[in-house]
Image (cartoon, rainbow, N blue to C red; front, side, top):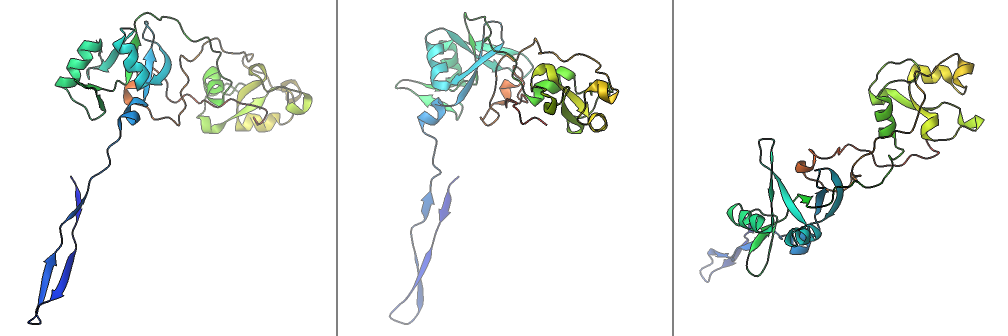
Amino acid sequence: MFDAQCSNASTLTPLGLTALTLRRPVCYVPRQPDMSTFLNQQVLVLNRLWQAVNICTARRALSLLFEGHAQVVLNAGDGSFQTFNFSEWRDFSRQEPHPESVHTVSFRIRIPQVILLAMFDRLPKKEVKFTRHNIFERDKNTCQYCGQAFERKDLNLDHVIPRDRGGPTIWENIVCSCIPCNTKKANCTPQEAGMRLIRKPKRPKWRPFVQINLGLPYHDSWKHFIDLAYWNVELGEEVQ
């Protein structure tokens, strides 16, 4: 458990013999995370309909749990989920201790990873972000000129009306295009290149429940509720 570093020093006795003097082992204890580290961890928040709506700190999650505004959601391991109110979670924390726990004066409680709000049943009013990922999702990884599906690495984003002609970088003017079709179209309009779109590009009506910064640490228990592969970078005029 501990890494001990021991050093030996040799000295000469009056008879000229070498004697070994053993120094006391120096043990280095790994530094443990303090309570604030645990309390600042990210917790996924679900609304009453079990839809991901937000992310909060563990400190906020425990406050909501204590006030009766939320329950802890725990994966039972068989594909089902258990919920715990504050007293049930406190008892469970005692029966099933976990390293990621915080201490109070009278008890120890585990840090939740997912909480379920008791009353809130709405979704955040957010439009779909204009990102590469969401354009690929809208177009189903399919070239909008030839109609063939490709892996994303083999697709480009094409301005239907070229930027040189004043074409804007918006949902209604950006489509997925395979490399051969993109090369054929070049800097022309589809009509000039003798090509047709398989469908008119539109702004999607669906929306992600929650936006996750992929730089943040996350738990496997979140995967059931959100798409962690969501690309969170807005597209701008740099789209090629």
